[in-house]
Length: 166
Length: 78
Image (tube, rainbow over all chains, first blue to last red; front, side):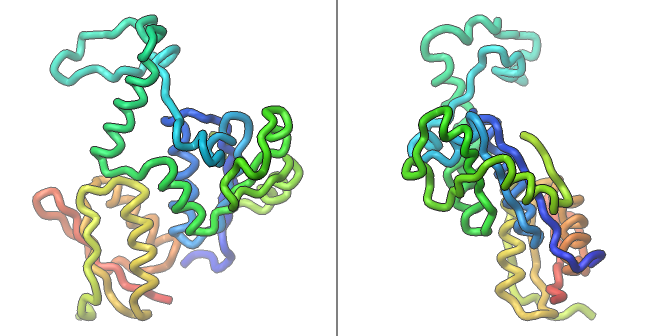
């Protein structure tokens, strides 16, 4: 052990898509597993991750994402034109595809990752401004979400050893 | 001489962050000084285990690899 003081991780989760939901949750649960304190400030669409209903329906869109769909190993030259992502049903298809990869790799769902955060005592800050702007009430969020402003998060992050914006 | 293995944690087929999360839970279930055998297939677990040792102070007594399975002996130190 190089340092006896408990380390702290402070993250901002600003994205509400299925793919972008994972990185902050993976980092926070890992930090907690190493004995660190961890806190996540969920802001703008990131707040969907704390929303009782919306967190179950996160999606990923191929529009504007040239990395999606990934090339097939068998046909690496085959490129799907990005505009096809605008066709009805493509977001649902991309979402199903990504959930398929995740479960095949035995990765937990976003809900399960959040449950792991709760179990590991990760602080879950719900951005007060986002709640106001989007009209989201405290009762719509999971009970562990703590409504807080930027001041609260910065006060927490000021004592952090690692801070990242996702 | 390595102490007897108190428990085995099979993390084969699991990806980050699950192996480290499961290991951190497993460590709490054994006595200080006890050794856990941990099996993993994710190549990322090799540097991750070093980092876990560095951050938590629990000691990796042994590491080996056979047929794509990584095996670690981890001793709870505190």
